[in-house]
Length: 127
Image 1 (cartoon, rainbow, N blue to C red):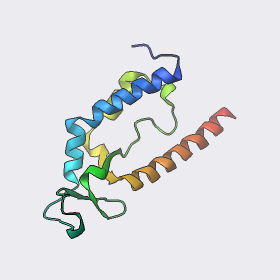
Image 2: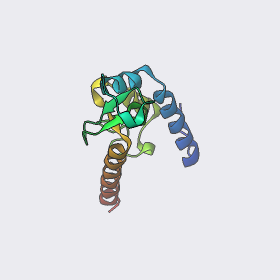
Image 3: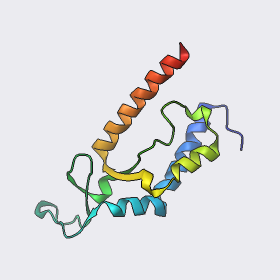
Image 4: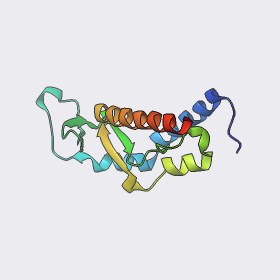
């Protein structure tokens, strides 16, 4: 499939691929690995599923956990435009060992660091 030239269309397709992954069994298995059995927090009685973030070690309701690709979907030295859709899909539906469930603040911080590295590498390439 030819990638669209329009960045908006590319991002719409990438978002659709990610939404499908968010409902996948692979993602569910990665989340299940982070579950902590027999944990309850008295102040949050309605939350029945808890996970422990491997980064910050905090107990977090599982519905607030995100699945992170240890090896980013879009490598730091590439852009979405450099990749074809088959590569993107293969990297999203990767080996289960490349996935880890972490809390939203930790995932946001990790993504921020990766994006800063991407920008730095892009500046170097453009010189």
